[in-house]
Length: 238
Ligand code: ZN
Image 1: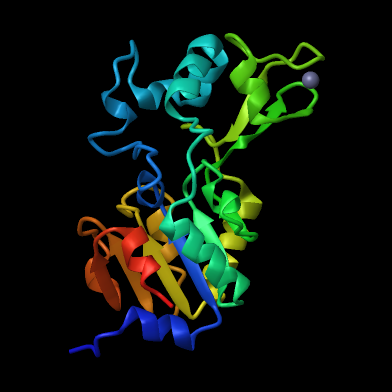
Image 2: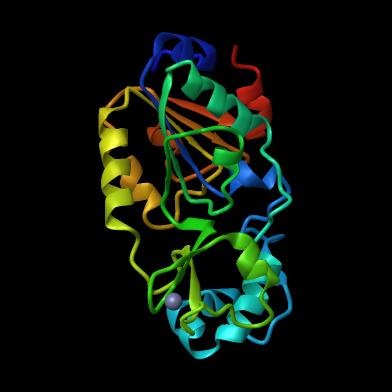
């Protein structure tokens, strides 16, 4: 039987922690989990959410894409919760080296985290598909129907849609951070979606910590499993 790890001790003893987070990290800030029952899958649109959030749908039905996107994927008023705040604090103390996130809401940066690897991009970055000019989120929110660049090109959020590849550099940096970490905390992800599960397999240490509301397929492979609120669990760390 494995020695039962204690989260507080593990964090105290390490200066090389990496945090890998999914949608569950942001639900405590009121952002719905895209894949959960309460998520945007259940909203009433003519097309399924997975289809609307695909590259071909963005190309062929751009106005409808933005209508859905602005209503369901962008939460400009959301604020960081206890988990985001604690992680930023651990980074400032030199204990946490990187956050790898599947979320696109920018809440880690709002909390003050610096090294955030956004696997699925961010709603805060938007580019003209023609000339590459950058636009802030406000520009997207203020545009009616399709946001257009001054050059006439369509603007696209820097968010990874279905059918699109993840950014290679972000993947490489995430792998690097995970391989060299000595503690890996995985939270708020069901670990069923690519590339979450495969990235975690790069971890070589013996302090894999899973924090989730419900069991995941990796529970039995991890060194410590905590079921509960991520914010409440992390808040207790001194
Ligand atoms: Zn342009």
